[in-house]
Image 1 (tube, rainbow, N blue to C red):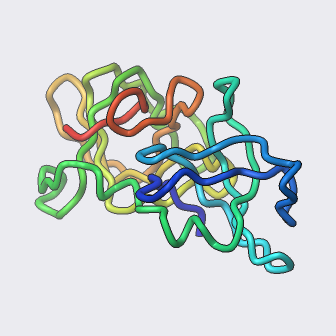
Image 2 (tube, helix red, strand yellow):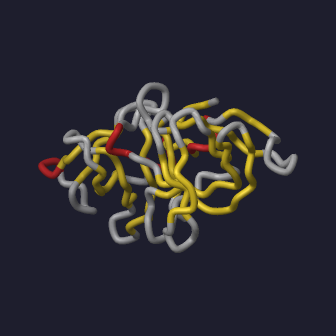
Length: 170
């Protein structure tokens, strides 16, 4: 399952190819940096991921020897525990920037502003667009609205959970 994660361990090298040769390093995932676990490469036992590269763009690459599962911590655990959506447990995040809530086919349902909130029960990434994360609701103009869909995250604006990622605990 594709999952949004935060690195809770040492810096992790990202490689261009699945066999992770030392001359193919294309990036680094630092402590508290967000990334997306996309899939496991069974041939080399490596993890295919999405991340923010040093040019500030969303990119893909590989982590060696299942490092995503060893050091990756599910994104929703960084949210504020809440029961605002239908009195069920979820994790609330505030937006640092405007983001789109989309349905399963990627159609924009509503544009949220910085300061609005989204509610997550998991850190599941979208199947066709891994930059989407599943939500169970959102807050706009002070109103909590139950909605099962996705919010499209912006890795290009920053990927550090505590300082510049598009979501933060709130």
